[in-house]
Image 1 (cartoon, protein in one colour):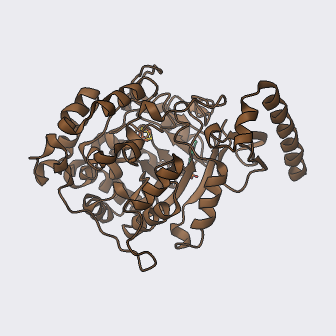
Image 2 (cartoon, protein in one colour):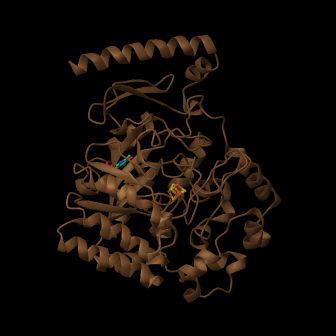
Image 3 (spheres, helix red, strand yellow):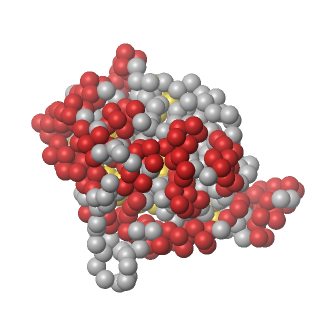
Length: 462
Ligand SMILES: *Cc1c(COP(=O)(O)O)cnc(C)c1O
Ligand code: SF4
């Protein structure tokens, strides 16, 4: 299965025909959405309107059937129905991202795999997965702010997104409830943010503020201005970043929502006046998410002067082949989108079919280094479960590949603690899978591993 997927990825636009020669960066200019029966007659102007994209987003099984008509086989629909009984995430796809899926090969399609779970592809959760794997709630300084690192903090003003991703690390709060997970999602409530701004004002060490969610794309223009201005006016805040998947899943937001872009533009101007950085952090995982709509959006964003960076998640069957990752990285760089992070998949529920091992991530990290300009090389990191923060993939203290467990320290964020990441069991060598099936044996093996890791960490500290 995983071999198949890798072959398919290599046959995707990731791999250049002929190989070896200089890479070309073609941006799909076709009216690709017309291959979806429901949108056969939709013209480019309509498709390019963000309001139309929002209104026509696909959020349910009947919606999928309606969009696909004869392309929706009963096997596909019942497989998605089975997937929805197991996933903590709602369905929401913009027409843009929905029509980037190659439906004739939906099973292995890297876009479908990110947004529409198939029941048949789930594997049992690892016993160590956690709802709040990054312990963001533990490090909450206010209801909307996670303060873990000395000089940077994470502001979460909204839990809604224009799409919902199967692999979301905040599946415990983002979007609406599902069959297996109930949540109380919140929209943006600007009146409640004052205590967060006050906290940041009272903590002059905080120089970097990440505005994430949820998705900053769904903040209204006046909220973008309010957040941007308030933060930039705090003398000790030096840099702010808005996190949005928008560029990857609804690029027409930036070419058709003039008011929103104007608000961002105003914030960027204030940033320049104050010699402070305003950035937009986005989230592409494959080159298939990039089209001529993306390059048009980037032209608009370049005019505002906002710095754009990309954070990807390493996902099995989506971008875990070197050619794909390399090409996506280069193509993003060609659009002035700077690859920043490639995260090892967090240990959250309902995702073990999407996770990879530390070993695979390390291999990709090694191949990427030297393959592109250093400043466009994403840092491959493990966000250490339990709140250790982002750690370079090769910086673990100890790693047992057979049972798939690695130990990490975090001297700055959480000195004296050790954090453990567990590879997905289905990706382990046969012997490792057998050990996990025997309660006593895995218990002994883990105890030994943890005691070795503690000795090693102790030796490094002194
Ligand atoms: C990722 C993250 C940040 C920002 O970290 P950078 O490495 O600067 O991108 C800040 N706070 C929390 C809790 C985070 O998870
Ligand atoms: S856009 Fe980000 S926050 Fe929203 S569902 Fe996807 S991964 Fe989660």
